[in-house]
Amino acid sequence: MDNCAIITKPAIHLVGMSYCGPYSTFPDEAIRLQGEFLARRHELNGAALSSALYSPYFGNEVFATYWACYEVNHLKSVPPGMVQFTIPERQYAVVTCTNKRIGEGYEQLTSWMNEQRLTKRDTAVSLEIFYLDEHLEEVTVDLHIPLADNNM
Image 1 (cartoon, rainbow, N blue to C red):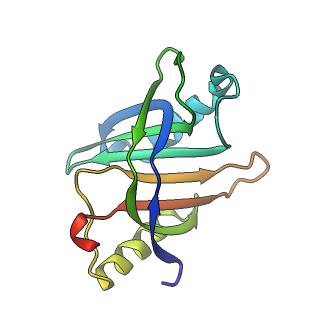
Image 2 (cartoon, one colour):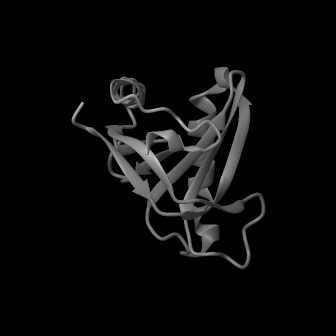
């Protein structure tokens, strides 16, 4: 489990689109949303700070809200159907995997967090960061689980 770590991520300013629905619709709807967002990235007029696709998400036992976003500086005008928001600085438990092995990545991270006696901050969003390369089918993904204050 040496692939897992605790990091402090500075605040990130994002612009993107979301999908909210029952867990039974994932990951299909998440993949569809990411494709729809990437098809519209030109509407940001080069405002994205990198090609990394940020997917913050939040859910409960029944449904989840999932985002497809780019990191940007504050935009004065946001394309229709998109929203901008800021995720505050936060400590995360992190693991790196690939888009083809996300399930295994979450299993590894959850096991490691349990071994380290770390607890998730239930009121904060988790993050998936996809390091896209249009020439590759399998890309690197960082999974971030926000940590509760009692872990620090």
